[in-house]
Length: 362
Image 1 (cartoon, one colour):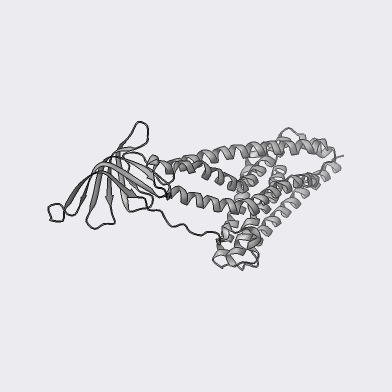
Image 2: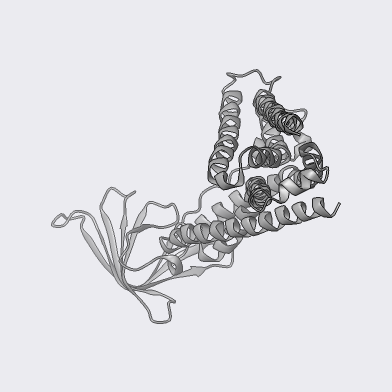
């Protein structure tokens, strides 16, 4: 029992460290991407943190399997390198018993992934896309850098500002060109900022400026000086995503369409993957000597990502109705399980041959 616990504690410790490292990397990359979008006016800055946090929650269903895979592989490799695995086998611990113990951990991890995938992820995905839409609609001048040409929140007006005020409340020496109007409407102003009316509508307020419309030299060419001018920010119409398969609660997928069935199989995939991939890592680390851990790691990761990629391919085939929905993603899971069984038999055969040689020598 002590030896089993030693292995499991080591595997869980490394898995947790890998998961934390992947989350830090994920947060860094996502924050950089969305801060870039906020700086260019595509997303309101106040939405960046919420969007990244929801994305991180959704990503856990993909990060937990790979973390547990690497944690299991590292723990078993250390046992191999320190000859502890040899001692454990001499004490009567078999590879099958190690797998059974590991399956307890992988089952617990699968339950966590199932809770995320079946319960939290659909609502989180829906909240995420709604936040993105709100972030685009609420993107304001405060999130636009000076000296960049930017469309005003999905509208048809091109906005440009020469500089920003020291307190970052408004932009200076601004320019707007309306692409929608045929009379080549242009407007310039010394300053501009965002204002919201009592109904929650947003507008860009231009102060101390001049507008030009029409063709220069013609009778219809008009120049207008103004002290204040409001340009309403056009918001995109919000879509109703509640019927989309990705956002439907899991129970609602059972009596749905072809796309609902495909989504149900896709949500089940990371749960099965979380249960099976640690066993793969354990057997590959057992098969090769500890001094060849790099070869084991390359083989293990290759098989892991091939499995994940084939799941994605099968999902695309299901969506396009090129694969019968009755099969779902089970052919890919079954092939992977068959590979695990074959690897296990090969592992056992190697141990039997070693024991036979030892018996003959004695």
